[in-house]
Length: 135
Image (cartoon, rainbow, N blue to C red; front, top):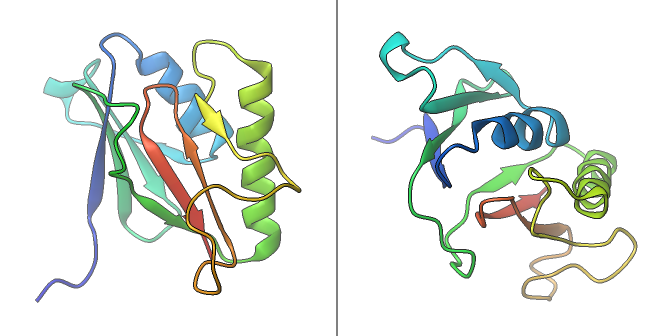
């Protein structure tokens, strides 16, 4: 039986690993993990806390209109707001690693509204990947 997710794989445009390091490592605060020797320079791995789960970043086709997405779980409302602010601030700062879209803290969150979704928001990374964040 499936007991969890080992990793998710997100694709980014060719030659944008530095932007991925900045966005996933600095803006989202994920910890870089070692990659196989044969894949260095073509893939990045990031640990999601101490869960054993990872985000893998590879080169590939991106679709900035796709609804496919991973959903990252945070432990508290404060942490959810903190990461939302970090993403939005990076969006405003701009630059090659800046998210394409980010919800503004204090305003209505994107995505479907309703009692089932009281605490979540979405962003699009620099490559167009849709990302959901929730409690």
